[in-house]
Image 1 (cartoon, protein in one colour):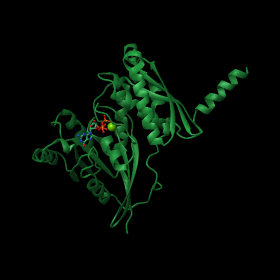
Image 2: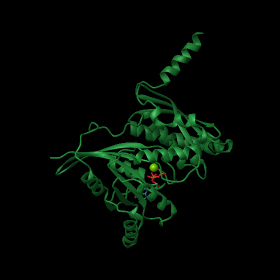
Image 3: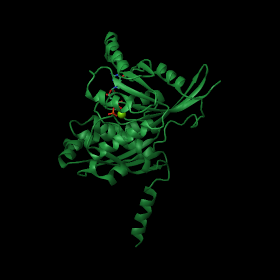
Image 4: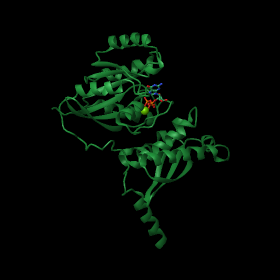
Length: 320
Ligand SMILES: Nc1nc2c(ncn2[C@@H]2O[C@H](COP(=O)(O)OP(=O)(O)OP(=O)(O)O)[C@@H](O)[C@H]2O)c(=O)[nH]1
Ligand SMILES: [Mg+2]
């Protein structure tokens, strides 16, 4: 029996449901999700293992930031992540929101995908929101615009037809090795996942420009016995935003922290002690060094985290 494996990038305009699809397929919350566009800022890996009657498959998925024209340094970096996800893949998935009318944003996302020679599936998402007859003209339209290898309607939210999508993906992959051990889902550092969950709760509880102006860094991560101790900084760009995020009597920040703690406890299967502070860092979206600090590639995730050396420095200071 053949074993198939390969690398598949999930692409599409912001808010199409790419991260919801990744989480649904790998069975774990690897990527945060919100109803605001530009939630995902970096490329995120999630691995799916499946057994089919004719053999097994391992699919390494890459979720990406929504394709858009943004002009801040952060937005440009997001699009660099998309470019990286286009290179050297076995297959691309263009995820489209079937409930939204076709617009310039969709045309632009399609343009990006058309630049590559890599086979591409059209994944028509959110079909739970649309009457079936309305799907046909949209499928027809996409069919005429590009030579898609497959067109698959799904609902990432309900899971409708997602198994079929995964099976179809597996059929398109070459025979190959198991790149990762069976239980491995993602190589994202735990510190990053914790920061992202905090950012998700902040996004969900704020509006207008605040979600775009928010960045989170977990600057202390320490498992002490049964308790995971986390210290996090939520960065915003303006003093007024800080006030909004904290809320009257600190209520909004308290809600963010409680919801984040509860979810981190569930996902990491441990008790969590979480402290959250809000800081103003004007122009962080243009600050290259700050953006490097947010990049999960520069974080370590497990026991040997930078805070160990940070504590050593503190000890040094106290002995002087
Ligand atoms: N009704 C419905 N909603 C969905 C479906 N898939 C995703 N959503 C919702 O669409 C919104 C955007 O989902 P995300 O998964 O964050 O979208 P994304 O493409 O990753 O967005 P960015 O990271 O901003 O590019 C969220 O509110 C999801 O709950 C679906 O199949 N049906
Ligand atoms: Mg996303």
